[in-house]
Length: 263
Image (tube, rainbow, N blue to C red):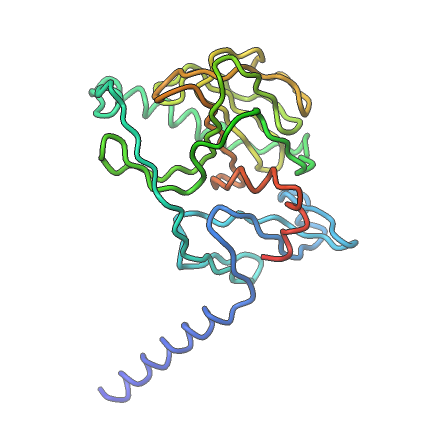
């Protein structure tokens, strides 16, 4: 029994050693670049840096203090305190849903999941994203959320407050793959940028694009509003890579591409 206990303790030490000294670390919601082979470019979002090919891997928010494995590499995901966000919704029916509204939101969730699971190879994003609206960041990615003091899912998007009617543009070239008027998101647009990179735009007052429309970087897609479940006019901007919600704010940093190899 004693030797068995020692062996288990040894395995635990080996695991801890591998975790601490594995190659890469990164924050939840960020993107990391790992060296790739030519065949990776067919089904992954890849970039070339200094004549070398890299594929981009999203770090899931829910894997904090854990790791993911890809292409034989272990990538550790740091534990990070993003702070918290507390909002109050006066219309309590938007917080504690009826059976009918719950059924509606579930159907809409499935529609969004289907869109996010789209994988287009006809487009490839330049990863030089621009800010989709001029305004003030009112809630950042990763914050713990409390609605009417009730804990809810973390805020895995970027909120940008702006006046009603402010122009919203596409941060990169893409294909409009979903438009709708949703319970939580209000007037809602989803854009496929290619190779697993997808973005969505919520609470719009007006949508001026159509499904299956190819839009250019900087093209107007609609206007800021306060539709859906909101406390005021703003854009709720979500970005996915390989179905993982990543931090949109990182994509609009000037040094985004250069920072990928520094994580």
